[in-house]
Image 1 (cartoon, rainbow, N blue to C red):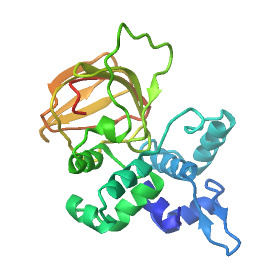
Image 2 (image 1 turned 90 degrees about the vertical axis):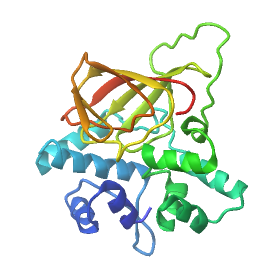
Image 3 (image 1 turned 180 degrees about the vertical axis):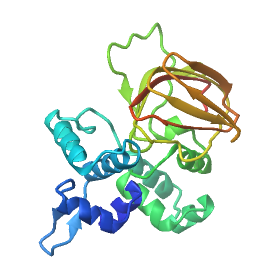
Image 4 (image 1 turned 60 degrees about the vertical axis):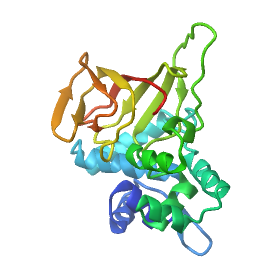
Length: 263
């Protein structure tokens, strides 16, 4: 990716990225022609730096120490099995219908350059946008991620981590713990500080979630705001517009259950 792509995805300016590089916090690869090239891991680092600065109020030295510790501990989302391959699926859906990027972008009311970037990098996606894309193609969110609900023959036992879903935004990790067609979809969400849904979305069904640790804020119909702490839970209809965020300074972990197969 280019430096402009990373700046957009991290929500900072190009000059800020250059400063972080001179401070030794970000290390892009250089082509023989001297052009900076960034990987998905670099975007993760940039987003982490921005969260530590704005949400946690950490100083440069503290951020560098935190990044060094994360590298030492081997915290790599790709190695941990997180798939970020939604982009190729979006391109496959578009090409199967013989549509051009400009045509799909116009229907979605987004810039063609943004759709091209999504197909190329799988980064910059969020649930509201992905839902608009899935409705355009006439499929569910699970289907666009290549995750078909199944009807289990018997009970399903999950030990430890579940199946990690394709990335729905940086700083968000979703594990599928269980799923049954026309029954429910059980997931474990881990949300880093400052991460939010980037707007409201809705679909058919019913939902229940319980906060295991951290803080979780959910807004229903853009006016009813509920701040949940560890141990708190909420039930609501899925067709009510809902938006969420992690307002705390620590990672939030929740169990989220959706009834129905429209997600």
